[in-house]
Image 1: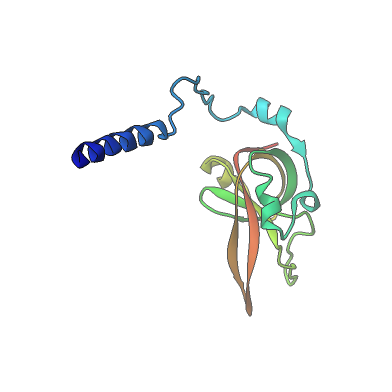
Image 2 (image 1 turned 90 degrees about the vertical axis):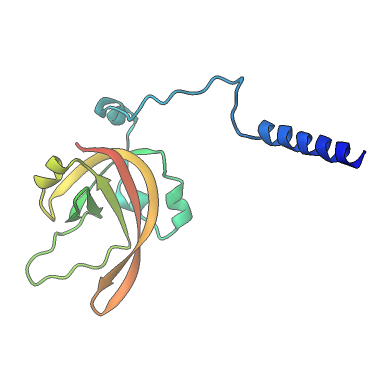
Length: 157
């Protein structure tokens, strides 16, 4: 009798785990249509400025994920797959120092587009916010953390 009860409980457990697998079997699955086109991004974009977005509140930045924005700024640096866009202001000139930005945007673009850009170019970009994060920067004699948002599926307007 104990064996039958143990077997029955094991079978019930298996069925309950199968029921909780997360597959919505009967419901129609939403098909992903892929990334938005430039035209769709342009229509969906809300124009913002760095003061509109810039914050030291990571929780607030996370509310931007999934939104599409159009924003202007200066290229702080260019990496292999993205550029770092910072608040509009005077570009760095010989002998000048710039106050460290506490917030920036990583704009992901194709290599060909990135290769044609230069640091301190002023650009306007349109794209979808895909993630947020914090990066630690070393600036002699200190280090500091800077918040950023990732803008994927982006283009230069």
